[in-house]
Amino acid sequence: MAPASLHQTSKRVCVMDASGRLGSSLVERLLQRGYMVNAAVCTHGNLQPLKGLNCDTNKNLRIFESDPFDYQSIINALKGCSALFYTFEPPEEQPTFDEFMAEVEVRAAHNVLEACAQTDTIEKVIFTSSITAVIWREDRQSINDLDEKNWSDVNFCRKFKLWHALSKTLAEKTAWALAMDRGVQMVSINAGLLVGPEVSIKTSYLKGAAEMYEDGVLATVDLRLLVDAHICVFEDISSYGRYLCFNHVINRPEDAVKFAQMLTPSVPSSPQSCEDLRIFQQRISNKKLNKVMVDYKELMM
Image (tube, rainbow, N blue to C red):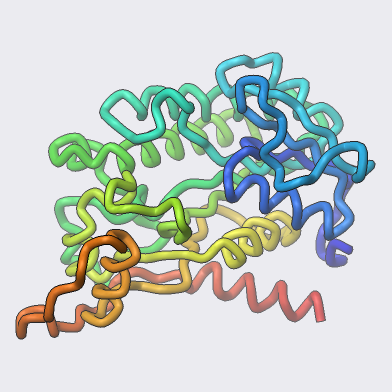
């Protein structure tokens, strides 16, 4: 059951896009917690991404084929819902981030927030963003602890072709601007790199990984914490603004070696040189999320 700190007019919520690893896990956890879930999937006719979950075996689940560029499909998926968990999944025909992806993700964010503003029952939006929307700026090394107050510089991102960071920064700023203009209550989860079998050296998040490592901001998050963080900031009526979400920062040589082996398992590891033995100071903070997560866990006990 949801904690007493949450005041709801409806226990029906929407997860969009529910076809990804995070989205499908959110659907599963929300159903376990007793919510009715509208799972909006963008799978071009294939409605089987939800790890065996289906409407026949779970009466609290409704599956919608949705498209963030089809406004009416968003409205249909939001009908009767009190909240939206929104995470952007790149189109199947363009799975990696490039210079054009920012426009795609910005359009999707705009459409989704506009649809929320037009849906009377929506009380809260939980918007998944990224730590890459926080860490990339010219003066980043002069900041001791990067946190939710910091934003990546879009001109810096363009200059160094940090397309994932550019896309996430512009999309999140678009969402915040529209939410504030239209009176939509929104919180964002700025996630570290979600670790898992799909992560490789080609993962768009990792452009600039060497600099992130040396800056002490190469942060990763596991799926369980990321799901818990989303539900926590949804159920806590006092949550606000942005929350950085990660549970590990790779800043030690032994961690860097393990991480590199995970990214390139077929490449034999090489001996570390003396230069590789430096430990870099962690320079990113998730204290705001940690505080709300502690309070949340106490409520659940």
